[in-house]
Amino acid sequence: QYVHFENKDIKKLLTSYFEGGYGPGSYFIPIMIQATVIIPFLYIIMRKKPTRMMILLFFVSLFIDVMSYTLTIDGSLYRILIIRYLFALVLGIWYALKKSDIKVKGLIIPALVSFIYITAVYYYDWIGIVEKFWNSQHAPSYFYTFLIILVANNYLSIGRESPLEKLSLLIGRASFHIYLTQMFYFWCIHAYFSDLSGILYVFTFLTIPIVTGLLFYKLDIKWTKPNQTRKDKKSR
Image: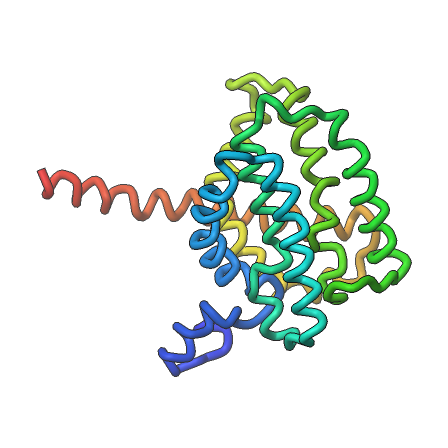
C-alpha cells in the first residue's frame, strides 16, 4: 500500500491498518484485529452452555446487524466492522466446544435455510432487513458453510502423509502471504484478466494468488530463518 500509492505520510499509513486501507480485501486486517479481541469473550460466554448460547448469539448477531442497517451506518465504516462476521466466530467456538456432539442431520434444515437465503439475496436481489452490500455475509448465511466444513471433517478421510494433506497444511501456514499477494493481484493484475469468463476466470484469480503466495512464503522463510537461527545462537 505504501509503495503503490506513494504515500509519504507515515501516520496515515499506520492508521490505514485500522481504517481498512485501499483495494479489495483491505478490510481483512481490521477485521482480524477485532476478531482477536472478541473471540476470548465469546468463549467465556459460551463455554458453559455452548448450544444455548450459540442460538442466543445468532439472534444477538442478527439484532446488531439490523440496528446497524436501521441507523444507516456508513458503508466505509461498516466494511471494517466485524458485525457481519460475528456469528461466524460464534459457530467456530461452538464447533471447538461441542465437536463430538454436533450431528450433520441436525444442521440440514438450518443449512437449507442458509442456502435459500444466500441464493435469494445474491442471485435474485432480495433485500432483507440487514445491510445489503455484503448481502450473503450475514448470520443467516453461515450454517450452509458450517455444514460443508462439518461434513468434510467427519467424512473426508485424508492420510497425514498424503500430498493433499501436505498441500492443505502448507496453504494454511502461508495464508497471510497468499492474502498479501491476492491484494496485489486485485490492485494491479486483475484488470488484464477481466475479459475471461466462467471456470477460466475463477481458476485464474485463485491460482495466481495461491501460487505466488506460496512462493512468497517460501522465500520469506528462506530469508528470515537464517537470521532467526543466528539470533537464537546469540541468545544462548
